[in-house]
Structures are given as structure tokens and as C-alpha cells.
Picture: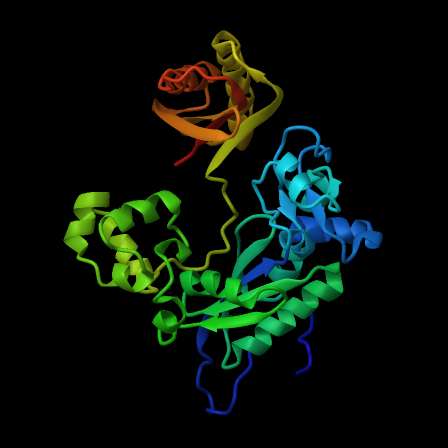
Length: 359
């Protein structure tokens, strides 16, 4: 198929006269995005295990932001302590995080997606949804991936679905650098026997609660009693869990500007903080930085979350809802300290974080 000119949407049909092509949702996800950007900047690293995180020194405290596929073969993954990554993969190349470089690369990709002519919804640096009409969505997906590669040098995987949920999950089956279609007809064949945390929106904590109820797989969750789950998770969340287990989502693809759900700051300390008076002072400092971020965002915060990672590597969070929407530093500080007071264990701390959440 010949690529469409820039700005012209691709619509593939196969006969049918004036019949409107079928609607699809495409989920475009850049493969190993941060590591791929670094390899483009340092071509000599191609094919080598690359880890990006912290200031690039695996002897210091910090966590992996991303790992190349070669590094992942050694058990290195996002969120892993850098020191652990170095033990698992002594031959890995460690690089510092360069946020500006990744933002610039992301902007180039998203410009290509917007220029495709399809309604595009950005999800962050490295992924987006597209609302597409075509009788050959795979060809559209391949064309979009080819445009991204030609324009930026970055590879993308594309998931195809009848809604955003299906498209998002399909992408994982297409990685790396591939295309995969997941529909209501194939949903249970592909996902039915997988654990519930395979679903977009279900994390480990929710999966454990479901397992305690005897619900271990996607198929079992889809067949669960809505009333029972409403009683356990709430009247909105309980039935919603069953819907996503059935592959149902009614959220439309929207081109409205992406709005962050929160703004936060966190610091990993090279030496544990044992004095909780110092912990309190650090939380105040972070809270004021977050308040400045909230003011810059121009949207009031509704809730403040404090994250504490104890030594050696156990993480807990507590939150406090604000009295009303606000960007006032004093209110955000007060909520952060109230959340901190909920931490009853006064063990040495290696990481602190403060996050303000919006509506």
C-alpha cells in the first residue's frame, strides 16, 4: 500500500461500495522508549544491554527507569534498584536520565501521530490511542509504525481493538515492533486463563483481594457476581472490574490535551535518614516544591500522598484529602505532614516522595 500524504488519514477498504469502513482503536507504544532514545544518541551501544536510571552510577542509590531488551534478558526491569541491576548484569551500560532528550523525542513521535489525520489521544511520552476507520487496521498500524521509524528512528508496537482497553492489552502481544489485534470475539481465547492483573487497571493489590475471594483469572472475574464485588470494592469499582474482565470499555478516544492526574517530587537519599525530625523537614521541603508545581499546572489539588521507602527497600504510602481544591503551599504542607503522621514505624528512610493529586 502506498503511504498517504502527510495530514491525510489512511482508510483501507475492500469493496462494499459506499459502506463506511469499520471503526477501530489503535494503541501505539514505543518499544523500550528511553533506552531506544539513548541508543540513537549512542549508536555504539546498539545490541548491548543498556540501563537508564538515576545519574547513571550503579554504585549509588536509585532505580532503573528503563532497560533495553538485552538488559531485560538478565532480569533487569523498571523500578529495580540500580545496584541490583549491576549485580544481575555486570556488563550492562548504565546511563543517566535525560528528561529533556526524551521529551524532545516524544514530541517528534506525537507530531507524526497527530499528522496522520486520525483523532489522537496522548497517554504520556511513549504511547497514544488513535481512533481509526478501516477494513484493514493492520495495514494502517504498519503504516503508522513505518512513519514513526522513518521520522524518528524509533520502533513502535501497535495494538488493535474495538475499544481502548482491547487495544492497550493487544500491544503487549505485538511487542517488540509488531502488530496484534484483540477483539471481543478473541478476548477469552487470549486472556481468559491469565491472572486478573493482566488487565489494564488491575494492580497486584487488587489482584490479591480478588484471589482471596476465589477469583484468580480473567474468565473467573468476568463471571463474578456484580453485587458481591460491589460490596467488596464499592458500587462503582466492583461492577467496573467485571466489565474490564469482559473486554468492555466505553471510554472514547479524545484529542483533548493530556492532563496529568498528579504532580509529585521524590528523592532517594544516598544515606538513610534515621532522624524523623529530618524526615519531617524533608517532607516539608518536598511539599513546597510540589505546591510550586501545582501552581504552575494551574489546577487545584484535591489530595496529597506521601511515599516512604524504608531501608532496605520496603515502600508504603499514606494520603490526606485536602479541605477543598487548593494550590496553597500551607495547605499542601499541612496535608503532607498529616499523611506522614500516619506512618507509625520510625525506621530508617531511603526515599521520600510527596504527590498532589488533581480531580
